[in-house]
Image (cartoon, rainbow, N blue to C red; front, side):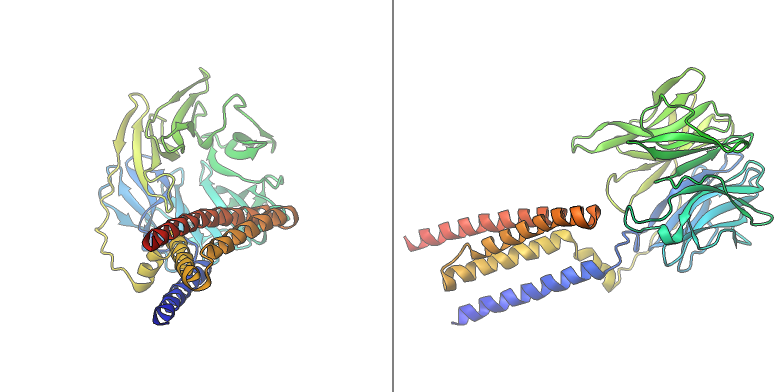
Length: 433
């Protein structure tokens, strides 16, 4: 009797911990960057090619920083108190910068400031979710991609509007809608040195492709339709070289590797210029296109992303790592960070398997039905899998996919419980023999 009570008590404790862990995982902030310290995903290079502009996280707070191109003399330009500042860009004359300011609701607007971060002013309203922005060559306008805030983050197929290209006059703050196509995505903005063409990336058909918007007549065309699927395209200001990332192969773990490619418009030839075996993004040409800066995600495909900035000499293809001399991190873990680090999918799955293994022991000794917990777990798996098909057909395919993934995890747990049950029964039979 005493052993029975002890076993039930242990089951109860594990059950409570499991429920609390699940509730914490469901109710906690899903933002993987909330405690992160490291480089953000956007960089730019000064007009004279001597300074690097970038965003940097400190314990989840993202601000704009500046450094020499060798990583020395790091300066913090903005202080994102309760917000996040990201994707900085220089103006053509190098006297101003812009960046995106994300508020607590996740809505991003454009802020323009002096090159030292002083005198910031917001130039777009919160009714738009801005995803990228660049200066016009003369610095009088900003071109940006955005979607109405009310349509940002809603279920696929339920939004009234999509992404479009906009322009804002920095003197009058007048916003002009350049396209009215409600694109599914719109990213990787760059502008020609003559200020006549804006280049951007769209997901068209089944792949990501480069498009060009003519500021004179408002037409959109595909300038290089012969290119394969590409990501993070950046057209040089002279429009003679295109830098982009594309799938270059698969790793031993069957992960796609995204390397940097250069396309020469005149010769119509493409060359792969990196061999990292990870993911390359955010290419930025120096003035004159003799050098190129970019980011490598060193922990690809993990999240949060950890980036390393590089500079490449385009004539010799020599790579130089930028070692940012940031202040040493003095990290003091809070209780919430420790708890957050402990509670994850692996821990929840382990608790689930432990609970059902304990129930297997209880069922074997006191109910004579050792396989009952395995049957219950298997039934839950089938129920979840079946509901995912119903939800996919009637409600939301993305929600169905999430439930399907959960059913897959539950199936693995059920197999582990079954293995435990078989081994446990075998050992009990040998003990009685």
